Length: 323
Ligand code: HEM
Ligand SMILES: *[C@@H]1O[C@H](CO)[C@@H](O)[C@H](O)[C@H]1NC(C)=O
Ligand SMILES: *[C@@H]1O[C@H](CO)[C@@H](O)[C@H](O)[C@H]1NC(C)=O
Ligand SMILES: *[C@@H]1O[C@H](CO)[C@@H](O)[C@H](O)[C@H]1NC(C)=O
Ligand SMILES: CC(=O)N[C@H]1CO[C@H](CO)[C@@H](O)[C@@H]1O
Image (cartoon, rainbow, N blue to C red):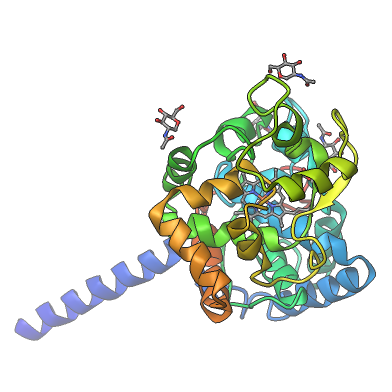
C-alpha cells in the first residue's frame, strides 16, 4: 500500500511538472520538431544585416513593441483587416523590417511547415540582431504561440511614449508588464543602436512646454546640433540615437544619458530615480560586462510577457494574417 502511495505521489509530481513545462517557454523548444529553426533565422539575419545593417535596430524594437501590446504574440505583424491593426498605430509609424520577418517565415515554413510561430521568430530575430551588432547573445526560450487579435489604439495605451511620461509613469508601465525598474534602465540601453525620426523628440528642441521653448534638461550644445539636423515639423529626417556608433551595440547610450544627451524625455527620465541613475553612473564607469549580462536577462524577461503557450493561439502560416 505504502509503495503504491509513493508511486502515486511521484506520478502526480511528474504530471504537475510536465504541465508546468507545457505552460512555460523553454530553450530549445524546436529541437525535435524543427532542429534547424534557430540556424535558419540566424543565417537569414546574417545575410540581411550584412546587406542592410540599419535594419538591426528596428527589428530589435519590433519585439519590444510586440511584447508590450497583448504580450509577445506576434500581433504587431498582423495586417489591418476588419479594423486598424497595431502595425498601423502611431508608434509604429517608424517600425521597419516586416519584410525580413516574412522572408524568414517563408524559409521556416519550407523546412518545417506549421511549426515555428511568428512570435518566436521575433524573439530570435531580436537576439540575433543584437549579436550581429556586436552586442551580447543569449539563449531564447521558445514555444510562444501567435495571437489572433491586433488593435491599433492599444499601442497608444501600452507603449511608453518618448515624451510626456515621467520616471514614475515609465516605471509603472514596465511594472504593468511584470518588468522591474532595473529592466527599464537596462532595456532602455537598446537605444545604443538605431535612429529616430526628428518628430519623436523635436518638442524638446522647439516647444517643450507649448511656449516655443527648449527643454532645459537637454544639453545646450547637443540641442544646437540637433536643431541643425531637425527643423520644426520635420517628419522624415532621421537622427542617430548614439551618434557615431549607432551600428554598434555598446554602452554608449549611458554615457550620453549621463551627459544629458539622451534623445528622448524617457531617456532623460532615468536621471530622476535613484536606482536608474546609479545604473547609468556604473555604465559610465565602464561596467559593460554587467550591462551585457543584464541586457540578456532583461530581454528574456521581456520575451515572457503574457505569452500564449500550449494550445492557446495558433501557429500562423503567414505572419501578416490569422489562419
Ligand atoms: C522606455 C521606454 C521606451 C521609449 C519611450 C522608447 C521610444 C523610442 C522612440 C520614440 C524611438 C524612435 C522611433 C522613431 O522615431 O523612428 C525609439 C527607437 C528605438 N527603440 Fe525605443 N523606446 C523605449 C524602450 C525601448 C526598448 C525596451 C527597446 C528594446 C529592447 C527599444 C529599442 C529601440 C531601438 C533599437 C530603436 C531604434 C529603431 C530604429 O533604428 O529604427 N526601445 N524608441
Ligand atoms: C477580425 O474579426 C474577427 C471576427 O470578429 C475576429 O475573430 C478576428 O480576431 C479579427 N482579426 C483581427 C486581426 O483583429
Ligand atoms: C508624474 O506624473 C504624474 C501624472 O502627471 C504625477 O501625478 C506625478 O506627481 C509625477 N511624478 C513625478 C515624480 O514627477
Ligand atoms: C507649441 O505647442 C502649443 C501647445 O501644444 C501649440 O499650440 C503650438 O502650435 C506649438 N507651436 C509650434 C511651433 O509647434
Ligand atoms: C500609420 C502608418 O504609417 N503605418 C505604417 C506602419 O508600418 C507599415 C509597414 O512598414 C506601413 O505600411 C504603414 O503605413
